[in-house]
Amino acid sequence: MSTHCQLTGARPGFGNNVSHSHRRTSRRFDPNIQSKRYWLPGEGRYVRLRLSARAVKTVDAIGVEAAVARIRARGVKV
Image (cartoon, rainbow, N blue to C red; front, side):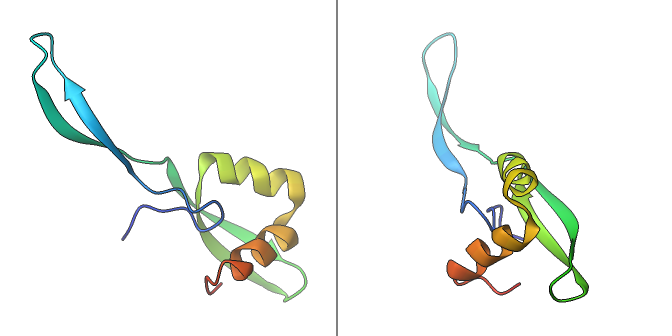
């Protein structure tokens, strides 16, 4: 399963590991993706969202209804 956030759209970043001798090898910076289940009162059901840790805090601040509306506005099926 791809490592991207449904709310913020955060995806892996790419860069280099730089050793002490300054040799560079490729690496990935993965977002901290968590699977979290929320009760959606407007639809009377639970939804399972794949969110970054930052997006979980955003959902806590704005509410699950507004967060799901933003996710649907991005064209993601919930």
